[in-house]
Image 1 (cartoon, rainbow over the protein chains, first blue to last red):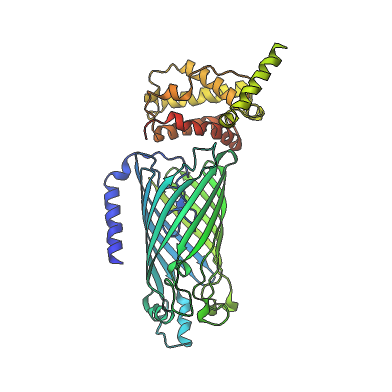
Image 2 (cartoon, each protein chain N blue to C red):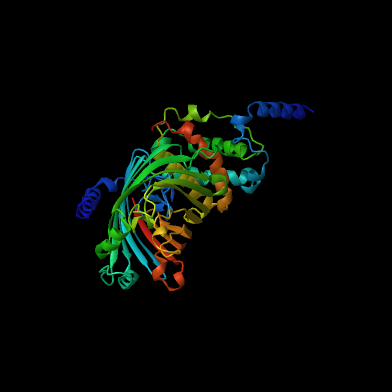
Length: 307
Length: 146
């Protein structure tokens, strides 16, 4: 944890001392927005676009802060990203998940969970564009294609005892390939991402699982569609399939994990600022703890500064 | 009669080169009409060229250009591209930009200027995108610095 904080500060320092001051020239919103994991894309899923305002021959910088609030949980996040020559993107994100309801698990077994516990996760992202141009080659079907990874480390605090009980690891690496295409003629952007992952609830509940849960990786598709209402406003929807590694541990759907969905609006009031708001449906999250095992729905807000 | 033969010839040529020309020869003149025909296109180009000449990021690329000639030539080109009754006789894009040293940043700046010009001339956003979709693929001939 400390190391990544240091790295983040170093990145910030380097960038604030000049690199980011050079002029950058991407077209508006074509670098996407920051996902919850820090990489550029929609809100929940990475796209093949390289983040920041930097196009070829330029280096750009972006930072973001976001918040998700559902009935029983909240997730705050912030992070930074560097875009190099519209080819390589390095991102760093920190997530802070308010897991307060989990204190009720102490009533099931002596887990020793502190009240008001938070789960913290750091995500180091790397993405490389391998082919295509999502925006300009509007006369072909060829999308922009990128490969990426998200290396995640989670700190569950006093929930470590639950992690031990489930036999989940505290770090994991997602690997993905994304294809993004703007159908300029129609103002429609489509993205498909295929992710290899063993993360539970994106990693906030660890990675893999002991028996009877599922420990191995699986391939999960993710889809986004966005429609440009104007140069600086896009609306869209996302659907992210997720593994369901932990459900077999408890009877019924107490530990079931569902796919994530959202509908969003993104607005760029200036070249350097974008604001994204979404309605999210995150399905069940440790629903044993929630009234009527309800689904978690709520809002997502994110602000990005990009140079 | 003569015109019919010309049209027939053009149709044959279009058929033969269909895969290449599919994008640059729209089947209808709907887009041309949406821009308010040639007069509407001329207004947009006029506005765009003035913007480019006033933009320190773009102006250097046009330092040898004569604005009036550029405007005339681009209007003809866009008129033809959108399905209008024009015959662009200027250089092809590759030859015209070979010595200019355009990179992607400059290309994007040019697009931005054109978008602002279309905004100023009240061209609806969806119509703007249909023109940009015809112009954007030209990046492959125009951008020479990668």
